[in-house]
Image 1 (cartoon, rainbow, N blue to C red):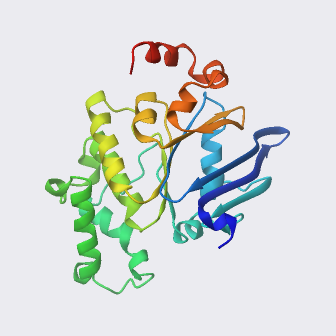
Image 2: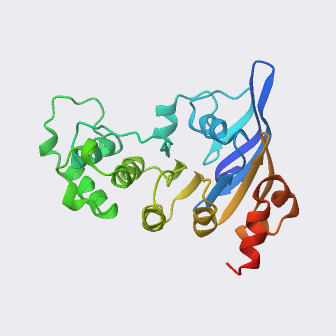
Length: 260
C-alpha cells in the first residue's frame, strides 16, 4: 500500500485559473477513509470551484486529485462517479416528474450492473427494487414513495437527493450546502440523516451554518482566497486566531464565551 492509498481523497498542489485570475492557489488536502470534513470559508473563497475540480466538472490548471490513490485528473464526472465518488449540488438535482421510488431506483441501476439494458422492465429487477426500498427507509420517505418528486417539501427533496447521491454505492460523498434554506428543526433532523446515511463513508461538505459544521465534521478545512489556511479538528479550528481573523471572527468568540 502506498501513502496515497491510505487516503480516500487527496489534493496535491491543486490550482485553477480562469484567464489571469487564479481561484485555487495550490491546495493540499488529504482526507482519510471514513472522515467527515467540512469545507468553510467566506464567499468567493473558491469552495464551489474546489468541488467542481474534485468531481470533474472543471479541469485543474495544475496539480492532482487522487481518489483512493488513483489520479482522476481529466476524467469526466460520470467516470469519476463510477470510481466511487458522488456529489450533490446547492440546487436540488432530482427527476421532478418521477416518483420518489423511481428516482431512487434509477440511482442504483448502474452500480448493480444494469448499464444500457433498456429492454428490461424495471419492475422485474428485484435487486434494484430492494435497494431502492432500503434507501427509502434510510431517508425516511417510505410513506412518500409514490409521490412525484416535484410535490415533496423542500427538505424532503433534499433528503431524496441524498438518497440518490448514495444510491450508486459511492464511498466518497460530496455535499454542497446540504442544509441551505432549511429551518432550524429541519436542519437538526437533516444532520442526523447525513450522519446515518454516510456512516462508514468519506464525506466532504461545503456548509455556511457553523452549527452544522461543528455538529457534523471530524475535521474542518478553512479556505480563504483559494488556499487552505487551516485543516484540523473543530476544536482546534475554533481556537485558531488566524481562522477567527480571516473568517469566523466574533461569532466564534461569542460562542466560546457562551460555553457552546
